[in-house]
Length: 425
Image (cartoon, rainbow, N blue to C red; front, top):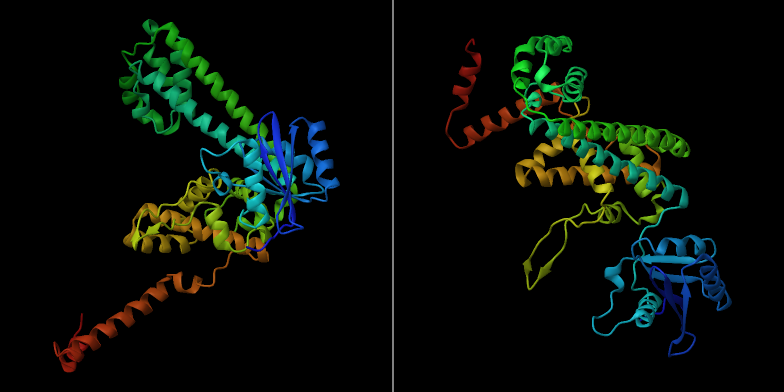
């Protein structure tokens, strides 16, 4: 096999130390230099000096948790660092240790057998930290909302069966009253006075869902704790959004560009940019990007039999965002482009596969838009744009084909068709 990197280094990274092996291929038999370093900054800088002294500027290491990040931060300015997925550099069980692992990584990388993972620039990595933290806070917010609603359900309060939003103005006023007052002194008139706008028409149903509720002081205290934590999470999300608006200032043009896609809003555009960046040269094609995001079917065939073709588990943060965008795109009223494609695929493959297909189409469009700088304008838009005039033309064409088929089969005569068209409706 051809040697791609004559001098390279394989690194096995752990929490407290790393083991590095420099592989030199000047002769027919590769030469190895092995050394162990701590993961403290001074030791990592010594490791960097050791690499430069041995004229090694290509390093490959396994992406073990977050332990590779400190090493990458100190090496990326002067050394080409390749971060490898563990499945590409996994050694055989029963014959491995830290030193052998680093040697095995170096041997594979020397022959170009290790595909590198996409690592964006530092500005995008920082933006990614904020968007992923916002995703976690949004999930926490949803959990706290469900927990708050369940706190009333177990106390015989069926308010959620009457109101559409338990966190609207009227419902919030009622829940505040319930968690701060004694159940024995429940005042129906006061409860009705808290209702606003259209909910006043359901006053009888609201009272029926609350009367006879059983809420102890301990349960009221728990509900207040949940509500305070929910408010704290909401405030944290607001502070994060303020900081995100500052961080995405250099990428405003890309955000506005992505917002031209049906279903993509500003929050979704920021999430997508934080995951893939704005430089599409890191991906050789749109297919490679979709594969990296975990939106392409798997290829698992053996002995002529196809096994599971499920999508992979990659794209833990990007894939849910694209699926959410796909759901919004197929419901968009101003642009039916993706809705029509979704309906066609759903008839053949089902709704879930159709949504994944739409998400993949959107990511493909994002790749080309960020590569060329053009707004969303698909080349097959004229084929999908089902206007009234186009539908009438298609209907007329279908009727002509049906008439021609009936005449050619001898089922009807041309004169019969002519007579039927001349008769008044």
